[in-house]
Length: 351
Image (cartoon, rainbow, N blue to C red):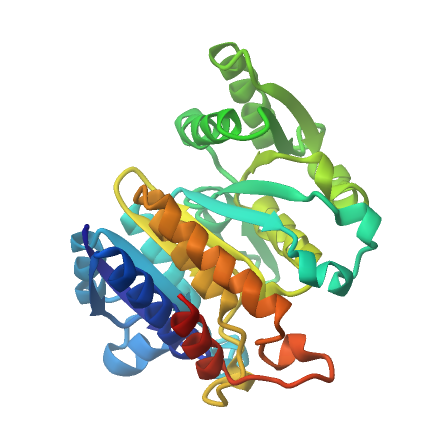
């Protein structure tokens, strides 16, 4: 198989972790006779520095022409610490999602046998956890009308959803549930928010199309609690943009490190794969960042192309590195801490 992949390294540790995912992807492609072509493009603060725009048209063109996008991270302290900044790296991420039509963020949460006691939660609470949260990405409060009034003393952000936006995300949720445990949880705040009531009635109307799927409806605050108490009770969850943003970060620490969880953002035609962590600017250039989430994101990419054996081999070698202690300083705990590049080299060699 020949694949053309857009490579958006981004900011901070993005270039370092992306390099390791490329090493691993090239190793698995060589082993199985595939041909990968990588096309780099700028986004985030790096793009602002280059052309003043966090997601330039040239980068969009590269993404549209690619079979998939492998993405690092964006963000820089000089923008975080400047509330008056008119252009921000994060604007590029929102623009990219909107222009590419990436309406569903697929965020798995699972545990690693060798790291289960590193989780902040007790072993008995998290054993068997294997859930996926589908977060709606291109609607809701992040894209609604916003502004200030009363001489700047009152601010507002509007959460808006259409039935069609909810249906397309819910459809992916139902379809995913059919391939897994056939359980779907719709997360909302229907006791307070009108937009959540539209979510609930829309999903209820779709239930009859998927009679094998058991559907539950839970308020977001209750889910936030249950994710800590019984995360292994969930299979597939669907929710809107803001709730999903918060819950997926909460769920990510169940594994013991945010540096371990992959994700995908999908639309009708384009798929983007990225680690769930941020740009971690304090570690940029030090060769200490954990690259495993990015490597596992590449595994998701191979699986979505139907290359399930290749994807599983990547996951297997990641588990081997964890079991044998070939890890970066965030997971070393007194043992030897390997450099980011050393972990990537080890994974590629073992493949």
